[in-house]
Length: 436
Picture 1 (cartoon, rainbow, N blue to C red):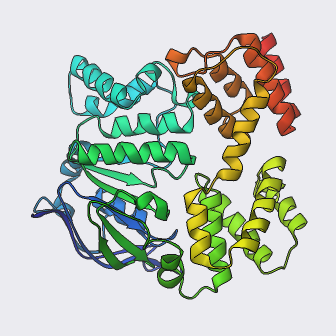
Picture 2 (cartoon, rainbow, N blue to C red):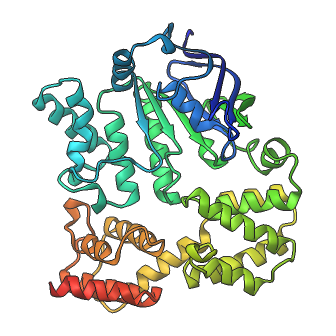
Picture 3 (cartoon, one colour):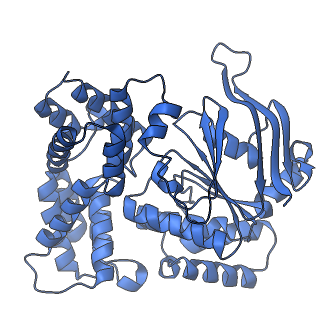
């Protein structure tokens, strides 16, 4: 089968000719065929996203060719590039990149408006794709009213609005917890297998490679290895052994262990937060700080040099790490254990918190309500949403994407959670909102 995307000797520099020059891509050669599900995989800063945006026509290489369907992308005019980005590809971003001032439905229809598609057809297409992705009830809400998982599904709907043959996904699960991350991966798999879309995903998380057909391993701006996988794919080869022997051969085992543990324990957190945990983990593993100090820095606010976890989770993670370090001395065994159930400490807590929050009430909630409550509890714990947004989602009807609780119940639950988190300012904000 002929390659639909082909790169030949592509080089790219940031700040070329300046003291800050970085050779981001080095003689990259690759081919991607129609219908493939491929991934650029490697550590942060290895050039994965840069390569993706070269293919998207957003960045232009300093040398080499980018061939798309037999045509050199670098010879396209500005108008031709714009059309290519509108109908040739769809981009899914880590940070969702939804326009906050317009409703979700308008975010999805906007790409079609740029092509001059009639309002009637835009509405029909947007309704169909949002229904398929399970966000039809969120059409009339704004992005800031949604959870992270909901925002990413709207973002995927937008990327598919013009029915492009190729989907570019830049760390699409980077800001999601494990549940929503798996939902997004299932969506990508479905559109690849059922709709024949070519998927190009950038990721640094080995577990997310479970459905891809081909992996391009990257390090320091170069492709170091290409691995093709059969229909029954396994990630066994892409575990701690890969991290240590291929990505980080220069690192001592302890640093490799810290990278593995940090990326899995804080799955869904930002790279900055993961790096901060990695730093303290390496010191803990070297016995340079004790368990209590480790717990304190986990709990300390990020702006004050800590990791920014809340107190209960900081203690849970410290206990969990102490036990797992005692039990598992081998890096590969440790990786498999964490990858199998990486967020047990957090998810156990969220379930317990949910039961505690509802303990004073006699009403029963449906599985859908429980899932939505867990999702927003986790996002409130991470301070992704404000207490007033948490309370609003609790109160919002189920058919509008909320939990569907009564106003008084929503207020009490929010106050209870804020008390647990020790965020008195949050309680004050909720009280003011309720009295307004």
